[in-house]
Length: 483
Ligand code: ZN
Image 1 (cartoon, rainbow, N blue to C red):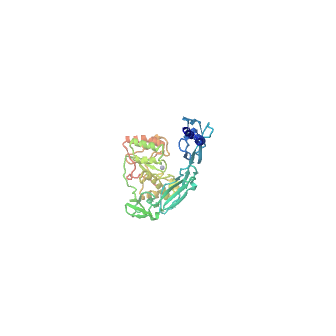
Image 2 (cartoon, rainbow, N blue to C red; image 1 turned 180 degrees about the vertical axis):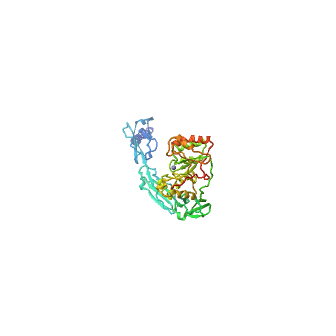
Image 3 (cartoon, helix red, strand yellow; image 1 turned 90 degrees about the vertical axis):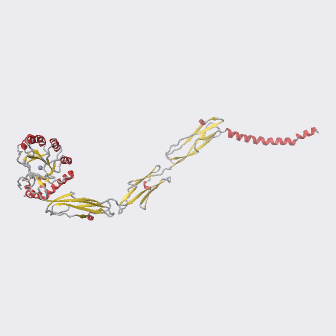
């Protein structure tokens, strides 16, 4: 019974079952084991950084590499990295990481995308906010568009105008859009400008005919609006006095401007008016200013504390006329050109020329000079060549116009007689008198006069003379008119 029971335990069926189980087992287990072994034994490439890298155009690609471990040790050195990334061209690139020394190919890839995410740049010429006159159309001031990839996109800029706004829009080949706007402000806040012809102060002698020297008005938006100028104030040239005339104007935006001008009506000059000062020396210098002589003469006068009178022309530098005035001398008028043929061609010609030098002096010094000397003096005969009797007319007319003219009673001879400073000195000092004003003719364009000046002054001081500049109160030393 016991034997039988044992036999039953190792029965054929049982053995078969065991055997059958083992057959299945021997097929599955090795396969599973092989797979597991392959998984464990195949080295794995681990990328450092992202699998997909997005770079901007022209950015630099930095290879971060990969790590490989196999059976506990680092075999990163066996990696072969291949890349053709070119960030100067848009596109998709691959970086491949291959492991050397294995029968089975083991590799990994990284994708690098080079894209353009930069917008084009639109540059506007002129202001972003443009102020315009209400009556004017905006004229395009210009623009340009530049893209990092496409280059110059100026021609692709779409310009639209709406609601006092101009919009400039452009798209690059990667669909990056740029947009800038320019604002148009229509307004006129600027006042017109009134320009007066001639001087801000005009002098007439009593009885002359009033003529306004004229004016003009310009507006930034309306242009010439001279015809809109309104004039207020009257000038009575028959009554001595000071008058103010006001010129005002408004533009179409109601901005206004106004300027005024003074008109003086004076008595005509009486030929024998003025104060005679015996023993006074009036040093007068004609035909300047001139660099190299006038400046030295001014230095000497300053050092000696002596005031003189300069009858200037339109020649020479402005600064010397300024100096003459600033240093207390009298800046008087000779004529602009000092050209006999011009100044004595006619009375009009003379007064135009005189006005020119008058305006020069006024512009430099702010002084309305009425003290004059005729080229060649009032007794000159050269004017006969150009206009018969002109000196007789002019010597009266200048007085009517409020000018005082001065000839001389001592000539230094510096204009023709001599070039010797000592002779110039003698010509002056030998003719000085304590019994009359001494009106001394000199020329500040002469070096010998410049070089004689110190001694002349010294002589005058040593011999009880005083020096003065001519003023409107100075008696007029006049010669006999010969034409
Ligand atoms: Zn002269």
